[in-house]
Length: 137
Length: 392
Image 1 (cartoon, each protein chain N blue to C red):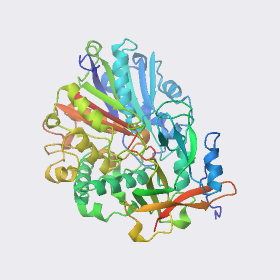
Image 2: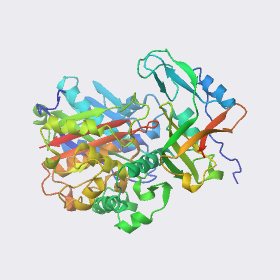
Image 3: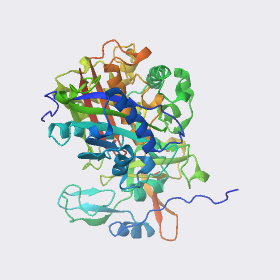
Image 4: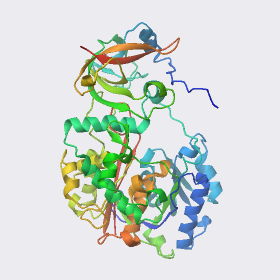
């Protein structure tokens, strides 16, 4: 019998993304801001998708946003069997970027497009704290 | 935008397709060889006559960075022009367009565009990019998760009738029953109730909204009208328009996820061919998910935005109908042959235009629109949209 359970896949920070994950360990949601175009971008990259330049700065986000869409996963991927079915939400952050995350601490009436949400955190390994969202109620 | 196919100087002259199977036990090399054998048999050509070759990246060997060259070796080809396309499901049409250009430019005379994959026998695939850090750690169920998110958003913005998608599933299944090359397990009729009752994978997406991976190969042979005169049994199916867009809305942080690149390439391909949606005699759209077909119908212009359900409920889309859609079952009812999948839709269009579709033959196959879709991005619609038009 195979008793070895698949592990949840974990992010492997790169030079570019390490500030994001370091801040996540302190429960801060950081976004890249492009001062030339005066807009945020997500996911973090080496350069701005608007200008192609490395002129980007990290700014702390409010952690507030709105559910843009959602899905309940009934067929789990490896490492997520124990929590199935689990909810995923696509959040439009107030800063103007979209982010995909797990949905936590919600009742069924909160599972709807337009629901206001706030960031919450889940320590998933010694090095990684994952962002997630919960209803802002 | 210039139309490189306007001159009708390069044609599809032959096609081939293997049986679609689950766990065929065959590698993509073996499946490709079977498909090429059929094309050589129809045309009397030898491997030495083929001097151009295009294929897809295969899930079943994608970690091998020399795949296309090894495949040429396996097939006995010594091409003077070679192309591998990683447009995901758009690879077949991307290969076709590039093969037409290669023949026009004199890089080669006879190009084989052959797509092959066997992900249910061999899995040597790998994802990278944003997925490892921002997508996989959430536990999202790959493409069904992405399309679940897309479909919920569509339902919030527009009216979605489940039975309209069910009707499309039933019509395609009818084609698969009459398609001897379709996956055998799908060659039995379906009802709308079967669709509605199928289990949920990632809400609101049901099992019968989705494709199922299979193994197989399919391809077309492309050459100049001049060279075709010396090829036995050569058909003359002309690709007359092609438009692709990659990374649609790629600089937008919060775009409408229901808006696809077909809003650009659909009308553009029609304009290049000088056709209206109502002129299209058969639509062979890339069908990884039923909702993707509805979005294409709307954004190419067969109906208005948000009217996809009404259009499907009011239109006979079977092979007997006014707008036949995926007459061989499409990928959803014939099986998705890994990343070779877009060739299934293309070869069915060519087969219909050759009048060789047997019991599911449409009555007026004077033209076809074929599409390709590729790859799911982060928070947006699919990356790649390709629309092509074929004419006699």
